[in-house]
Amino acid sequence: MFSVTCVAPVNIALIKYWGKRHEELILPVNDSISMTLSTDELCAKTTVTASESFETNRMWLNGEEVPFEESSRLQRCLNEVHRLAVASGSQKVPPTWKLHIASVNNFPTAAGLASSAAGYACLVYSLSRLYDIPLNEELTTVARQGSGSACRSLYGGFVQWHRGALDDGSDSVARQIAPSDHWPNMHVLILVVNDARKKTASTRGMQQAVKTSQLIKHRVDQVVPDRIIRLREAIASHDFQAFAEITMKDSNQFHAIALDTYPPCVYMNDVSHSIVSFVHDYNERMGSYHAAYTFDAGPNACLYVLAEHVPHLLSAIQKVFPNDLADGGTYLRGLPIPKVQDAES
Ligand code: DP6
Image (cartoon, rainbow, N blue to C red; front, side, top):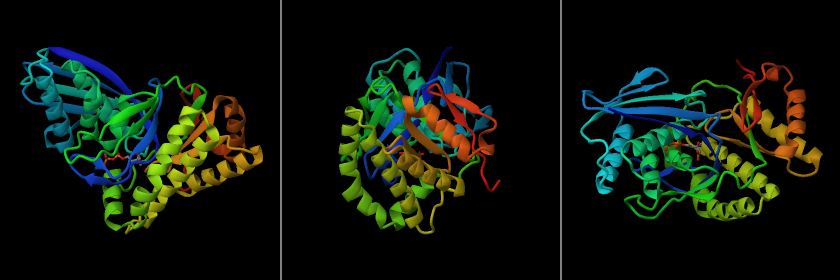
């Protein structure tokens, strides 16, 4: 019997992945850039055990069994890992041995907090350790086939997922732009507006967007390529002003596309919108960008803020959302994550 346990953190996209050019291989219509959070807070933890005595592959997610053999994405990841193991000549664990996989998230699943990114990254990385396969670009193509955004969680720091041009997806890989200690005073504050499961899953939402949104075509051709270049420059030069503006604009454009989808996908709620207004008012009062928001496919806000501005920003948040912050929260990169209750719930 062989067993490995790994942890993989969530990544939060600054330039969003939204739309596929190939559904099964999970090839995106545009490049994206994200920041991977530190491993001690929002993360997935997976234990993979291989044994000669196991009769079938089985998987448990947060203690509940999931139908492993029926999930084409899980199957694809496992098959791809087996292929890499054979190609690399790894003999450690016979590929015929069945697996038992137990994975837990320490944050709400499918609430727009990138749970699938951490989950698949953790699964693929754990399998790579089990079969003794190196972490390299090719492994990111495997995680990508579990969930697109997962390929970015295999690396720490700032990561770019390249759209790629080849039909087989072999050049649609994630690469680190800068390591996790590159911008040490960059912090993320997560405002948990609502931790319920999202109404329209990302996979379905982006399928519908590619089919029906006109704005997505403009974004892919005219907007993202330039934003990728400018965000990379902002990260390289620690330019928070450029970083903040690109990040907020890209979040807004992603949600504009969600609304331009027919029927529309609504991920943000009234509290999310009030957080957007709050951040713009706050930055105006400060005279420059001190905070930047981004929202994934859910109502929860991720705020990017430099360490020196955290205490002031937090006290401003507590003034604007006084009752909502009463129960404090957990910590992310050394920072409190306040809980903001959904105004409607
Ligand atoms: C809004 O990676 O969850 O978080 O590839 O269909 O599994 P699938 O989608 P997923 O989509 C994430 C979308 C996003 C933006 C991002 O992370 O880039």
